[in-house]
Length: 92
Image 1 (cartoon, rainbow, N blue to C red):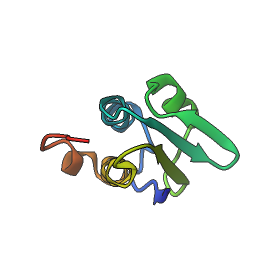
Image 2: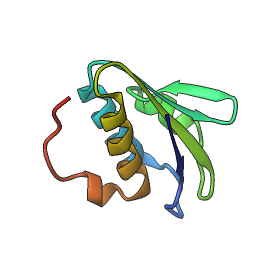
Image 3: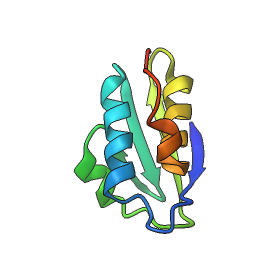
């Protein structure tokens, strides 16, 4: 699990949520985001956006399965600066 602070002034809006979802969907294991007591499937963009993670909030990124730490780090990068995370290939 990695705890990530939302640093985008617009929160976890459509573009970074879409990137998080696409990264999570490429991973064969389960991936979740948590904010407070709410947990969502990170492979579902509507669920990610429904968390309503705003600037300054913290979310936990939780991946289960092989190479879970790698996917958590990649999603952390996507949340904190999605331009950074949009380059490069993914191999899990």
